[in-house]
Image (cartoon, rainbow, N blue to C red; front, side, top):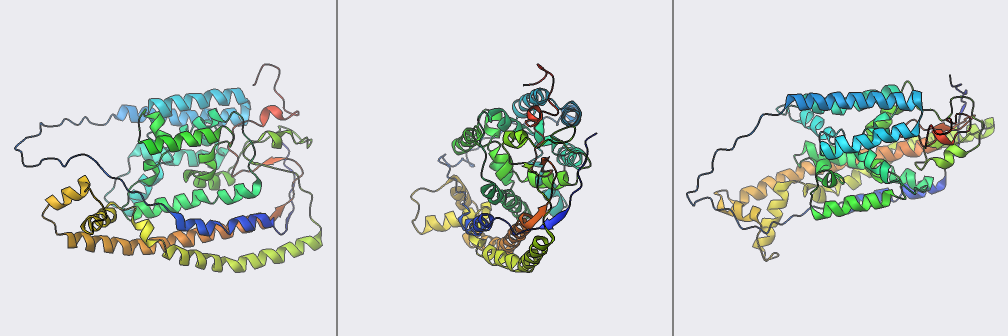
Length: 440
């Protein structure tokens, strides 16, 4: 049984580089891109007398859905066993490869636990939307396992994380200050997802999934390029999507911090050799820290109190910036995009109409009705932008507080929230080295 060192808590002022980097997060909220897609196909003919043949839509296979649930639970259970008991990186690697093949290429990335967030939100905001049982399990099961065993889902079960783990051949460490700043973006993505689903803009996680194009052997050119860039970057910066974009990782992070059991680096007392921290490409291993003197602890406590007083100010700044995002955020909605396209065509800004604008003109609906509906939708995004800005301000405030809290440690320990339980550090610990030939 692993001995758990006693921890004394104290407070110190965080690295000023972290504060300097966080300052630029606010500015990035101004640069949200608006998606504009044009279709170059001719308008369909609705008055030619052609009658469409009846379309047979097969019923969904409950057997396949049940099989997917069984495989998910089985893989999560096996991952927990391999991480907590077997502690063999090679065996975790083979499960990672299986997840890429089965959940990725065979099931084509769907059902996806990451995308299931949107289905759950749709069920919350729309009472008429029914969340399928399979989707509910794929959303809840990894979180439940994270509460008990840490992020074993990320270790080798999630196909998005697994494909990135396979390409992480020459990973280098990201500077801790940069990593803390980039770790805000998953929260921004999660907030955008909530706003998008709540206001009817669609499922943006599925729309911008960087790897589903590879799993399904087909996607838009832009998304294939985006996914390819992430995989190329992932050779040197391990799991860039998991660490700096994945909104589901926000939930897993929180659940894993409360986990009853978690992966440990060494099965016995740490000898502070630093090999495990050097082997972890995720900056997820915390170094030993001696207890702080009482004088420094009191100074840190006062600084922490000042940060807590700044919390409402940061939230207020976020709300103010978010209120400026009404226009770019509203362009996520198809009705707003169509209204702006129609207005642009009427003003001569575009040479060729799109299939959407031509189809609307062929209908009996007046353009004024479209413009009025788009204006009403934009008002909703004004409130959504303020909510998003306040949420991001709150996240930044808590992260600043987190880096201000000093916790003494007697040995090297994994960070329960950011550790992916990948097992890379197991084979480097001289205290718990496997026998020759047992691992890679």
